[in-house]
Length: 252
Length: 247
Image (tube, rainbow over all chains, first blue to last red; front, side, top):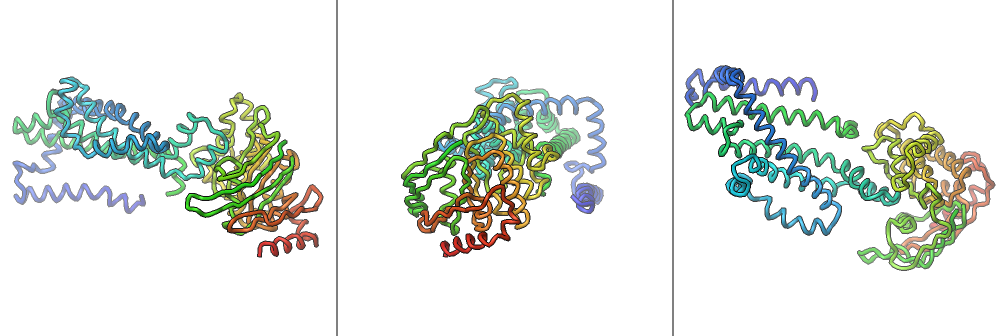
């Protein structure tokens, strides 16, 4: 990003917050439904000071990370195998094509039936969403690896384990990273949605509970927390990408 | 050391095109053979089949004495394109060639360092390939091939993408590496002068379908110098003769 681009990137959210503030103070927006940003900020600070923010964010983040690992690791491994072996691909491709389009939110009730009221159902919800994204993106990543690298591996008689983890995995890493970024987005949606029921902690619970109590202030505070959580995770990933894929720096 | 016999080799692509038709070729132990031919004559296909990266439709390749030495691979390939793994440092790339050999780390390290030093890349073991010039990348690829000490070395237009000056320099470096080790080398190129400079014999392929048109022994003493050789009257004669065969 150039300095100018960075300035625009910082100015963008500020300008929208200002417009909002003006729209509310001129009564263009109903402050009952759209409290002015100054009030949302004050509420958010109060929410943070009460300790509720930290507790709820920690629960949501924990469910998100555990679900991402449970779904992401097998998704990546199956994606590697699909990219490399046409029989594995022939088997999994139709299965994924059938299951992937099902809205993951729609299977939440089923997951509650299967896993009960504990944490497992929430992990499973996140894992299912992440699994498909990782499998699809990793497979695409393996298939776009330059054939020359496969020739080199063959010519030098590279062992299967080294081939998977030192050729295919790093070769597919740029696409895997794209998959992780998409996964974080869907994982937040699913983690929050899974908290609407059968739990008393988490940002999703906070949002659902605030709606039931008609507490618009707390509803906004929790939404701001979800937004910040997603934003921090996305930018954090961008930073680790530079560290994890150092050979890509030169190409950009 | 190894000798190689190519016997009645045919290759038909799935599309139906006959790429190679009845190719026969005997390559002696420790011989440096260059293969030239018009583009599309199947010379790269021939090398890929010899290196077991592709299978023939008919015919066979018999290699005698081609088993790898202890701590070495039976053969190695230097490719035309950028073939170093971009995600590995130069030293890791060379060391990766030892993957199947199960040697102690210290020995791999010693041999990697030695080979990189021989091609003048001793200070670049920790660099990533994208930090190297085209000529340096090909040097590293040559080092990788020599490091695993194969009796047979296959080279598929290894210097084809480089500028003329770098090519001539690398030809000299390759010859001095080869003179120390006397591996059996099959060198594919579209550069006629490069072939005459390097090879003991130049195999001329004709196109559509690819088949051996002539085999020209190159009668220069070794060690050779790629630049001085160009001043020899016989050098020009060889080049013109091969040009005529390709017309």
